[in-house]
Length: 162
Image (cartoon, rainbow, N blue to C red; front, side, top):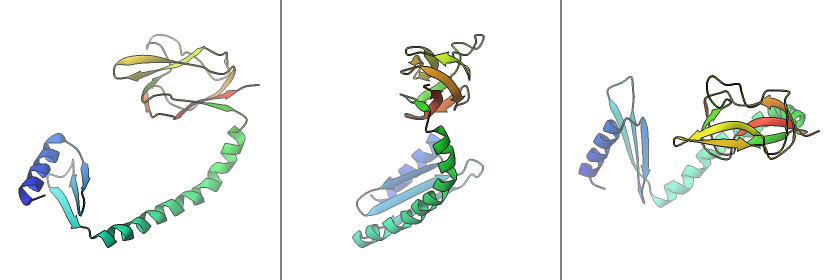
């Protein structure tokens, strides 16, 4: 990649509105950051020898070491929720508890549900997908706010199957 290609990439990133772009090729690593509140652009270009790539891996280890310290705090909540079934999002999209703004929510905390009942709607690419229950039980907790974006496999509801 020559200087002209890098300059064109910087212009493209600035026009796209992206705040950060990272590009890694065989021995070149480029990071372009643009600040919304700042009008300047920051570009980092780094030549990585093959040995440098092996040394870059331990940098990720300290962040992984932070996660186990958070696990004990989450463990009591996980043990408490272990008797419940978690209903997760099958798709990425926007979570809606109601079929339309002027209607009531599909389910409320404390409501009994059975297999096949519609629990919510997830909008993905202008399509509204009804999410049906695969279990029977009682809604214990709604884990996502209405009109919030959800990821694939994100927990949506806790259901008590008893």
